[in-house]
Length: 368
Image (tube, rainbow, N blue to C red; front, side, top):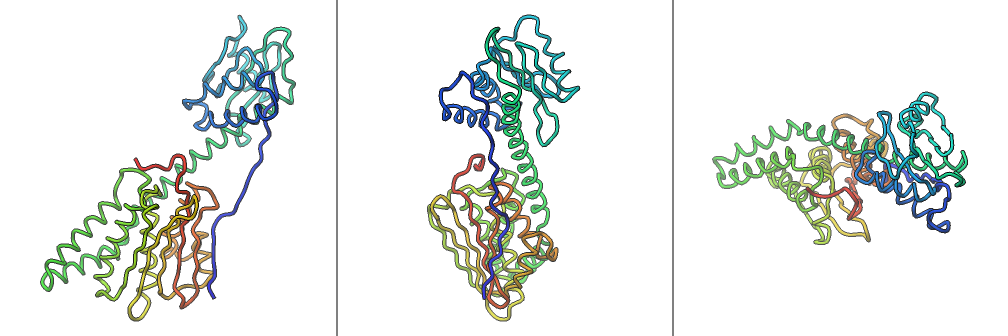
């Protein structure tokens, strides 16, 4: 019986819209402005779109001026504060007490990201204009803080993905290097032409693995590196390993994280086919599935116990087997979200199939 293991779960968090003000008319207008403010703060308080966020907040609450500040002071200001306003004193009071400051025509509320004070939102209103209540300002601050929290999350995910990629690059198997060189040496006298081709393949493999061009490559580039690796392995298996590669043209230009296919193929060879008596087969296929790009790596090797597959995806399996798969799974979930981890189908004696599903297009996932 084939068992399916998967990593990640679907999660969602609902946010509340900011307070209604004399800006956009109607609930849908308010919701749209709230969404756009979140998009403007995608890169944090120091992003290029922060001034646009301040402008939208000002319009949303009907303020004369809005200031967004971090703990070092004002970051961006939209509109003119009342003459004589001591902005530094206002910020100091908010930061000292961690609470809102209200003294008409000013309202200042702290920005808490992950329960930590990270900044302040200040709004100034014209005399005689009804100012938002304490609860309304708190909700507005929560909306801004939630956008900043998402920004921090994206930055943390990018740092984690980069660190995992550096780890993977540093873990090219000495076992593979030794065997590849031994195979090349064995062919030098018997088949010098093939020895030269294998040496070129080996150099190309190393060049790709240590490339620093960027964090993302096309499916076509990853497939080329995978084929190079498989040719080296087939020579080591004395051509007892059959290789099948089928890739739909529509997915070849899709951008994916660097080194996600090859480590899975390496795992299939080392832990699936090397332990199998007789010839073996490994197949790599790719196709479109609506908005998704699907890549499948399948071998007819020895397979594994379902519990072991689960442990590998959780990163608690045997180190020799867990490093590559767990690394790829973690990077996929970091880049695309928890629902995009690896899917493993396996059973003892039934081979192993690993499936990657990622969006064909996603903001920030581009080949540089």
